Each structure stands twice: as C-alpha cells, then as structure tokens.
Image 1 (spheres, rainbow, N blue to C red):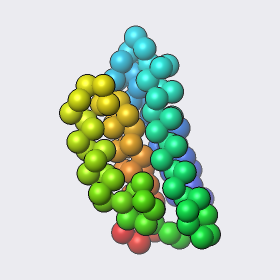
Image 2: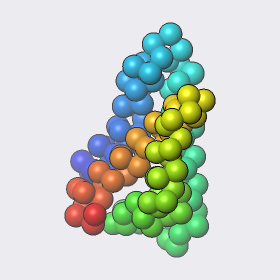
Image 3: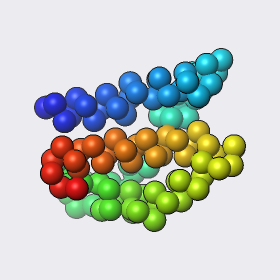
Length: 105
C-alpha cells in the first residue's frame, strides 16, 4: 500500500512542484505537459498481463527501456523538448522507485 501511495503521489503530485519550478507563470500548462508524459505507460498494453504489481517496468516495457531513457536524456538539450524530457525522466525515476522498494532492481 505504501509503494502504491508513493508511486501515484510521485506521478501526480510531484509534477505540480516541478511545473511551478520550471515555469511559475505558466505552471498549469507545464503541469498538463508533465501529465501528458504519462502516456509513455501505453506500452504496458503490450505486456501480458498488462499490470503486474511485482514487475519492474524499467527495462521491461519498450518505452521504459534503457535505450528509450537514453533518448529521453538527450531530449533535455533542445529547449523545445526539455519539459517533455523532464517529465519522461521523472516518470522513469518514479517507476524505478517501485523497483527499488520491491527489490527487483
């Protein structure tokens, strides 16, 4: 239960702070972009079962692969893609916390 609460707090509440720090004047738009990066979880539909609470997403799903994470890192450099990259990398960090807490990482 604690892992569940931590995971979804990091996915929905922490991006509020990130959005405000990133652009205080347009934090609402920034927050929506950060929430939009959660579409990266669509790759879970390629797995069977779709959801497994004991599975570490990092390295398992295609958009959670180490190659994808490397691409997300390089997206930090162009200003146009920076916020999306921050959202994707924070999403990967959030998912990796689950792996660490479960001992599967």
